[in-house]
Amino acid sequence: MSITVLDGGLFTTVQDAGRTSQQASGFGVSGVMDPWMFRLANLLVNNSTDAAVLEITSVGPTLQFNQDCIVALTGATGIATLDGQPFPFYQARLILSGQQLAIKQLINGTRSYLAVVGGFQVPMVMGSRATSTRYRIGGFRGRALQTGDVLPVVRHAAYVPNYGSRHLPSTTYSQTQVSIRVTPGPQFDQFDQQTQRVFAKMTFTISDAADRMGYRLSGAPLKVAQTGNLLSEGTFFGGIQVPQDGAPIILLADRQTTGGYPVIAVIASVDLPLIAQARPGMTVNFKLISITAAQQLLKAQQEKLADLERQVQQLSERDLSPRLAATRIARLFK
Image 1: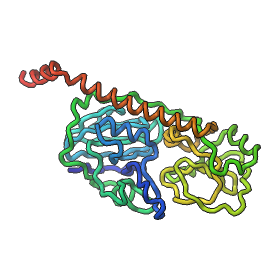
Image 2 (image 1 turned 135 degrees about the vertical axis):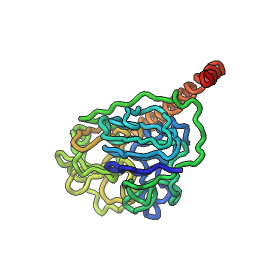
Image 3 (image 1 turned 180 degrees about the vertical axis):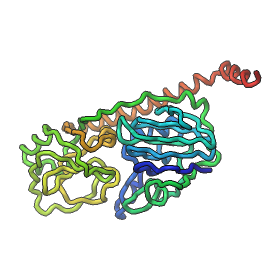
Image 4 (image 1 turned 45 degrees about the vertical axis):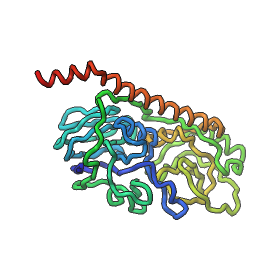
């Protein structure tokens, strides 16, 4: 069965956790920009944590469902309607065959994630369904969605018991500034101490040169490290490169596989969602922390996800008590 795209929105792609095993062959990882909201969307519809979703940027698509389907929207919130009526974020909801879901402008944040039960069933390419528009592979024909596209979904998806009880608190994002925790990068010590201090205290602005490959920051230029003949090395999500003009670049999901600029810092994994939800014009400042602290923060986030999984499951089980189920069945015969 399928979902028909009536309007593709500004930039909507199929994404999952990315093709993490192909960088040595020259293929970028791609995958979701906000891994936290990706996991929460799949949690709400009881998917595996890496099931393919739609990543929606700024202005979303209009979709017609050609079968009954349980879905959930997480991440940036804004205006969403189902057949013209308000549609909630952070809740699992049933959409009936023939209904139209319109995700319009996103107001609080930049990227939303739409999960459907069973995930979007586009072909696997090198172990992933993630779209790479750079290489034109993965997702739906290696590109963003367009009017007339038909997305395959699971024909007989597993039913989610008491899906109406599966909900999570919404997240609010700052629309003006964001503070990001970073660890020292591989070439941090090659920048002079004055530049290190300036980097940690300066406020940067996200320029208009911002997309899934990376965000270029504007502000007083940093003094470039004296690295000599720096060999190209593998890149990583959240690495902050400093090219010759001194304007830092944050490397993101669609980054190139190798780079030759010095990396002054790396965004802590727990704060990648914050930068993913930021947009041009917002200000950014960085707080240096140790690698140990970043690991502890990541462990705490993983524990939080496990707690949320338990909470959602308990909500479903609580509302599936035999007495309540019997009451609901009785109503059907009245």
